[in-house]
Length: 470
Length: 73
Image 1: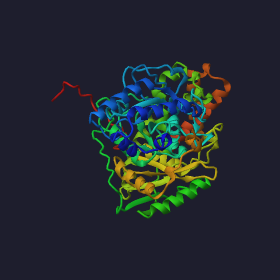
Image 2: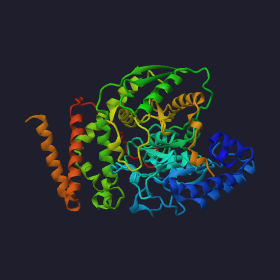
Image 3: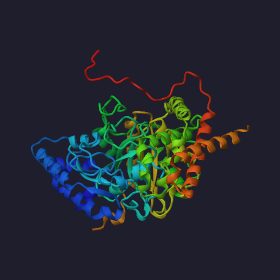
Image 4: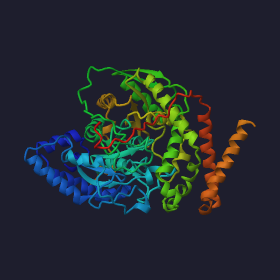
């Protein structure tokens, strides 16, 4: 019974809760126990929030029993990347040893919105220190230990939302919130075989979330399915006076059936060149599958220095965001050796080069949108590789940056939403992912495409064996 | 001066600034990594400088004057 519940998508869990076949207290206990017992073996957990979870679960039980059902997240446990501020004395470490006891006296907007939706905060989840803002190159860059991938503990989860990926893949929480500046939601979704949604920049308030790069940071869900991501996005999206970059619009998830709908999908020329063989093979198979419901054609983006522009913006804003770490020398107290000196070079960017990058960003955003207006989504391998060994520097281990990085630079630089879902497995049993990237604010379109793909495939129904044991 | 030499000269000067500010807390090995990092930063900037933009192209970052809650005009 427990295992069935553990890997049950949100919509089905919600039906069980609403119909009172299971209570929020029972459900939260299952996940709290799993987080407590199994979380450390994946280095996925920073803080178990049992007291708060029990309080929220009891409230959900009272409300549902009284017929006051709030919606599909009511009574559903979840985990927060440990860069989201939480009150009640719950630490918010940002994954950094010098801040492991840091606390806030307020909840991040996302935490508050999920509470208002009736969700139950089960734990704060491990992450790469400062979300990778110091230029980390290895999975060990966090004081909680290298995040281990449930599909193979000797490989890593991807990052920086590492614990969020591990916890959902291991069935420790039904969904988690991660953050992405450049790859930090899609990478763990890829490595852990999950659905991960990077929303449009500004779709979700970042108030109370650690800032890494003000003009690139996004918050979004990791779940078992694209449908899970849509349900969570609806709860966390919307305007927020506390975050001036939050878009002045709500998000209503359109979960209507996709049968009979035909999409148009672009595939960036040579996008899978340089990818590992299983990634390339699975991507081609995924395109063949999706062509049942979509017209697929090759396309190209106009030629701009996307990576240089967005990397420059990231360098400058992260150096500013962590100015105290740099000026006071606190970087030396971080876990990864490369994070001790990583930020210093970033202080050498000239102001005119930063502004040039911002100007190019405007031009490229308009031109990219012009190209994307012809498509419902652009498809690409989420990553050119499967999860790398836990003890290996992944940047050295990686092939040339290539077009995969181009998707990251364009997607994050232009603030575009993208969803990654599993596209298969390697011979070694490691997941691969396909991403569908859309125009700004068109999450419903890419969610529909991802749902249509998942309706034709069963990769998302596979789960790591050792997570199923016990 | 050839572009490549200019790029190296700029990187030399930028590295000296970083070293003057933070060098006392970094080992020789770390300084070498910082130097590589500065070369990387300068390499990115060189790509950006190749793009020609007209005077009218503004930075894509919206600044809005702060409007207080009591400002209803």
